[in-house]
Length: 445
Ligand code: CTP
Image (cartoon, rainbow, N blue to C red; front, top):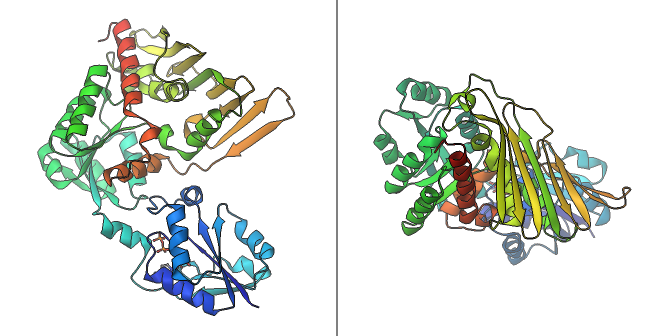
């Protein structure tokens, strides 16, 4: 009996998949099909898979060619599977020619000709019109964003607006996108807007984009006043538009894994969270010269408050701010202390004082530690009373990590709300509320 194995995502099962499975089956007597998990697809950069694992397995089953279906969840699994299932032939489509030659040490490798003019990517794009995104702002974050948009299928950077015409033109030329002299021109050309302008301008831009019927992805902090963020969410909801705060950590797979473990009981009940993120900033930069809206908290506060709000919620009993200020009064190093009925937390951030960036979550049975750059979570450890016992977890974090939030934003635009829990509206409201309390206490609002 000849045993054959093949692998794939099999998203939106199409004729190319069907023909591949048919020919794979003809290569032998018994066909095993490995279907990839969502997590594995994300880890290898395949974002925006539409069908769930269960649907994809069911669709493969329905073709009638698979004698057995297994799940592929990690790199290196293929060789193990070949040994485990005593495989004679490994096969995949010709788009992979050469990639699996290393398997020849274990079995025969056959590359089957790929069916032309069809792919899941094509179908994803056809099913949903490509969302064209217009960008407001041309700073460093906008540069990272434009690069990462290219990696998510179903969305494309259409153009850029900046009231400083020359900056917009320069940016547009560099990234081969359009530039607009008037913001109205941009609204006509796009479906969604990315707001990456200075903090204090976010509210007006978001409002006007929503009023023009556009979905909005705003850089953090979305706005600096509680009432404003509530108003914007209300407007978006009433007009069936997506308003999304882009705190990249909230959407990255490693951070979500860490939260899952923190809430799983593995470390008991969470009682203390200590978070720190510092980034020494050039004293001449806007972050340290904008005496109204600059400073550590507006710049980095969203990151350090995120784990605390995710783990303890928004109903803190007490909050206290301590800051070290520069000559112009801006906070160079800021500590927020939270008291909750069942726990305490501190969020520390700094642009002018360097400290060890880390996230520490202490529970009644153990603690989780993620070292810098924990905000791009790719590795963390769980420790217990017994110092010999350490559980280690890692999860890929690709590129600048904006691709994860862009992919979730797109899913929401396309009507799938399964990512909404990663940063809820009320968490965004709580973040704005805390920023407002701080700025008021500093006499800046
Ligand atoms: N395949 C094929 N012909 C196509 C598309 C896919 O033979 N037109 C094969 C692939 O070579 C692979 C298997 O089907 O062996 C599963 O591929 P998968 O990556 O799931 O499908 P794609 O359509 O290529 O998906 P995507 O566009 O997301 O990369």
